[in-house]
Image (cartoon, rainbow, N blue to C red; front, top):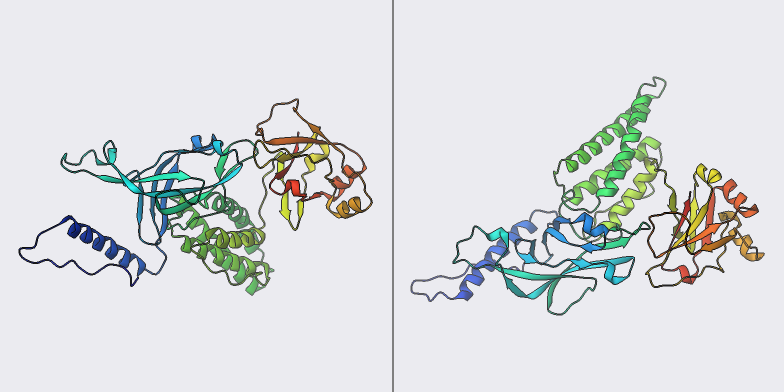
Length: 414
């Protein structure tokens, strides 16, 4: 804050006014605004508004419609009012996940044709910053950079914003970040609320238990109000949202009468994906989420294993079951002939005794219509003793072989 140029420009009678004086005056105004924003306590740098064409994004083209942001050094970014940027083709990268960066270039362009300034007098000429979207974190002539996020290609072949990275933001609700996660939490809160109301009717509960239920119920109502505010386009600072979620988690721990697994959950403005990911994961456990049924499930990668537990009952009646392998790029070739699949408890035994595991065969062209992308390979699982073990244990596992290091694995049935 001490490096901000907030000293006023000296003016005196008879002074020759040069363009440098007006540049310094403009810098003074910008510095004064930045000075006041830094004194508000909460971090006020990051993205305040972001919108892009959802239809084009699904097809692999990122086209920004509006962007309002302030970089940590106080540099403002405004699209389309102060900056021009062309769309970026994600399909051309041939990757299933890419990080996208917005680079502010050192050169400028004239504002002719920008409809934001149609009402300006003709003698006023606007100068716009020139920007470029790139998958590289550095480009020529870049004087500032903002990482917008990670975009990934789903198993159905469409692109979407991934939750693996969240840039610093100053508004939740006017940006696409966190919204799917908060919507899922809202569904869990709504499912738990009637259970707490029903327990309040139980007169045999001890008074302190009833008090705990009332406190947790009040926290649920506060969370539902927060979610409603966001739906009504009332932006919230991410700190306020994070504080509300961690308070809800602590109240849920009181309701379950357990010690919090992580009682200290600090807010980190420069690591939003990490701090929100932690509190959301804990909340999902405390609120006992209800998982939506689907015809394909993604294997979880952890400790060198791809694992899947809690298999749906529909698998027993499925006509065909497939192991899907999503290659990291369209042109990458993967062969899993040496991979063994089994229930989780038998995986080590299958490898030690050199057993086959669940048999499978590669299906080059599945004889049915599907919505998966061309980078997805189909392996049909065969019935037998090992498959019976999978159904009984309701789990599957396979080792993360080096050829699968950058791949995703799914279970699909029909």
